[in-house]
Amino acid sequence: MAQLGIRKFDDLIGRADLLDMRKGIEHWKASGLDFSRLFALPTVPADVPRFHVENQDHGLERALDVKLIEKSRPAIDKGEKVQFIEVARNVNRSVGAMLSGALTKVHPQGLPDDSIRIQLEGTGGQSFGAFLARGITLYLIGDANDYTGKGLSGGRVVVRPSLDFRGEAARNTIVGNTALYGATTGEAYLCGVAGERFAVRLSGATAVIEGTGDHGCEYMTGGTVAVLGKTGRNFAAGMSGGVAFVYDEDGQFASRCNLSMVSLDKVLTSAEQTASVHRKIWHGGETDEAQLKKLLEEHHRWTGSKRARELLDNWAESRTKFVKVFPNEYKRALAELHDRQVELASSGNNAHVGLEPHALAAPATAAV
Image 1 (cartoon, rainbow, N blue to C red):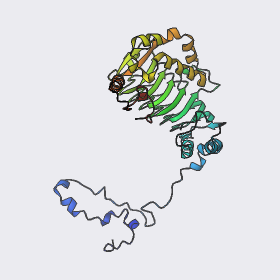
Image 2 (cartoon, rainbow, N blue to C red; image 1 turned 180 degrees about the vertical axis):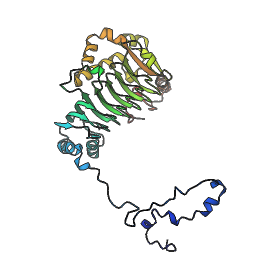
Image 3 (cartoon, rainbow, N blue to C red; image 1 turned 60 degrees about the vertical axis):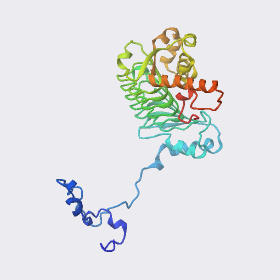
Image 4 (cartoon, one colour; image 1 turned 135 degrees about the vertical axis):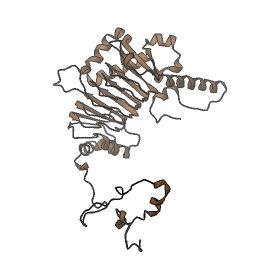
């Protein structure tokens, strides 16, 4: 640097004119390559900086989460229950993410369920409820944009139509594309239809929606999804874990599902499943009927869904129209894990090896 007349490293930034390129250009591998555009120096005044000299203003002090954190302090600092109402606008992005960060700094494992309940009215911006931590419920009356519930981490996201809405929820969009992307734990109850790639890479959360666009449950590896209406094409592409229950009202779901990695099973009554299906391949350690009814009940409780209420009121008939999307490898893994545990138990080895069968559908924090 001294030989070049340079005193500071900052003064080297952008000085392509100081590069000695002769050896590189003469090398046979560089034959025919022209680097003149790559090393071109823009013609700018001397006072134009070549490196970082000022901080960007991301406007975080104006984020909605700043207000949410302030109002949630009794829960964060003292573990008290908190409930309040706020207004959401589509410019409020990643609502709940900063709040979750503030919460997990004090409570790494989160808080008891529903310790912080925030009712919002309006439109949730992109990534509404992203990375939402355990103990937080975001209850949105309105609609939300793409990536709703992205990386959901134990919290609960509820989106239901405005009270002024007069349409049919199962025929109208409530959240955008790629909702519940990579969600690991927690719950989402969405009273309406989602865009494309709903629950892509979902790995442990629970979600209920009333219809989806194309590529639903793509690359899903765990968790449970219930779709109470029509799906788009290519459902379950690359799905290797978890289970999806789909209400196949028109009987055409098989033509919209990617069957390369999954099987479509009937949802049996609890009595039928107990009598005919070995417990070792039960998802979550419960019967399909019990799990599905619970999901519908919770969906109705949180959103007031008319579709869920109708399905429950006519359960004997509606159950027969539900299809269970069951990944083949997940089914095989459940069976092998059970057989392995039986073998260990019979050999007198009480050491805990591997996961319990229900843990394959549980969050990634399950004991190993």
